[in-house]
Length: 140
Image (cartoon, rainbow, N blue to C red; front, side, top):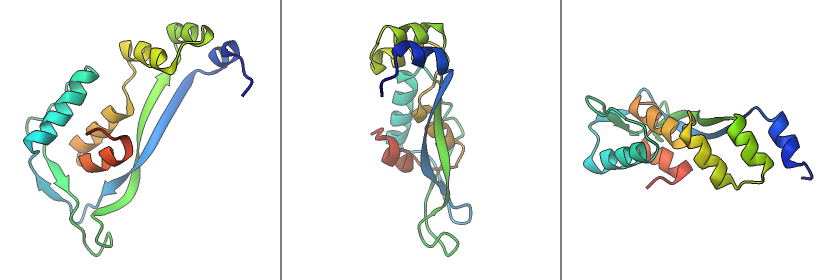
């Protein structure tokens, strides 16, 4: 785009990424326990990003389908987000032409949590499903 690395690092303070996922229909969502495979997926993601997802007493929901949601099991959409605050370490990486992988690795050392973590939290809160997160982020 013709913008120097210095100009980017000095003007960008925060970067926000989002994906829209379908929200479970409140009328027909069916509560159930997590399968062992689902627990393993969630725990694997948690260990990768150093996040402790508390699965004790948590349930997930299946999208069933009813008249209210036109048989889809979902009604409306909700965003899943990741927010990267550009601190001095990341500014320096940008100025020096670091790759996006290097910048991401530096961000993960701080408070940055990737989009998949927000998605898993929304699954644990009964807002969407693990399958819906997988469709947008390919986590399996």
